[in-house]
Length: 206
Ligand SMILES: C[S@@+](CC[C@H](N)C(=O)[O-])C[C@H]1O[C@@H](n2cnc3c(N)ncnc32)[C@H](O)[C@@H]1O
Image 1 (spheres, rainbow, N blue to C red):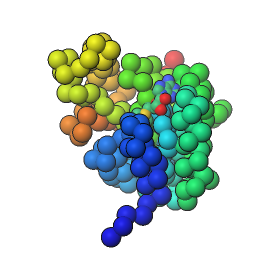
Image 2 (image 1 turned 30 degrees about the vertical axis):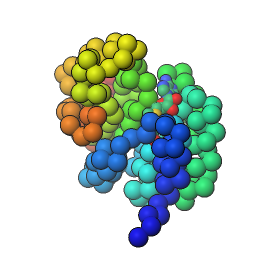
Image 3 (image 1 turned 90 degrees about the vertical axis):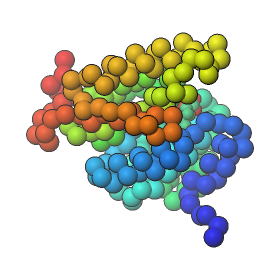
């Protein structure tokens, strides 16, 4: 049977052009977490051509995705795929360097999906986790990038391994989160914000 899903055109385009997108095994795992935790309001860092944004928004008609992309060509293509999808009105694409963007006043998210520059994982984590409520989930892709094996990497990629290892130690030890790394594809970092629904984690942080 021919597959028909709203994200297929974006996936085919990305594959044809060699644009990195989330692995199928990883996105299926994330879809499961969204259902299990009842996550509704998602902030994604790194849209590329909109594949994961469309796919995550397709899990349920209650889901809203805000997705940030700094590359204008990617953003343009993503807008095309998102507008053509059935979840267009539930996805907000912001063309911006993520670290220069602030959520609208009063905004909170249930899930933060970090899938952008690996060298900036800690910066993304620190900047956006204050906007997660208690029980909010952070998902970070590629935290076991190429098995964190420096010998398998080129000169440009090698320094990344140290940064990713440092970030992994940081978020696994973070006292505000219950964290783990799953050996799914290139590694999925999962961090669930501690606290009960009555706590206000953002106001409580200094
Ligand atoms: C791996 S791709 C995202 C793939 C997408 N999440 C998917 O699975 O369909 C990473 C994207 O993040 C963008 N990016 C990297 N660093 C960024 C930053 N600091 N702010 C905004 N976008 C960034 C890149 O331009 C690239 O398009």
